[in-house]
Image (cartoon, rainbow, N blue to C red):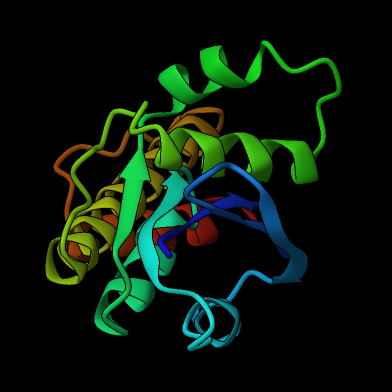
Amino acid sequence: MKYYAGLDVSVKETSICIVDQTGKICREVKVTSHPDDLIVVLKDPAWNMERIGLEAGPLSQWLFEGLARAGLPVICIETRHTKAFLKAQPNKSDRNDARGIAQMMRVHLYRAVHVKTLTSQKRRALLTARKLLQDKAIAIENDLRGLLRNFGLKVGVVGIREVRGSHSRARRGHP
């Protein structure tokens, strides 16, 4: 018999719902949102997993990578499409969302999204951090220029030596 799982991921816990090919709920459980904990539940030999649905979100790339590495048939699904499907449920909860995602997997009613590789995620994180640091450095420099301008000092050419020189002149001229 084939089984389908739906994962509703939050920062601390993930709700898992496993249904069989007829739609009967076979297991519902909450585990910490870590790939190792999810693998323990989903790799159980009792379940012959056909598809595992995971809604795209902040942790989904990391969880997807861990589950895929373990050989599980995980699919990352589009959030807006999932939201529209789950909106039909009367009670919104993590448990019911996991049930809905499991049913979406069973009836093949989902839109898969591309999950970036771990390498591209790392590169993107480095570029984002670099841009953040550059923006902060420019903001600090502009703040210092504004503070020095109050004392009649105009910082001209931007460079670390020139800025240090301006600070030294400011200390000598104003105690």
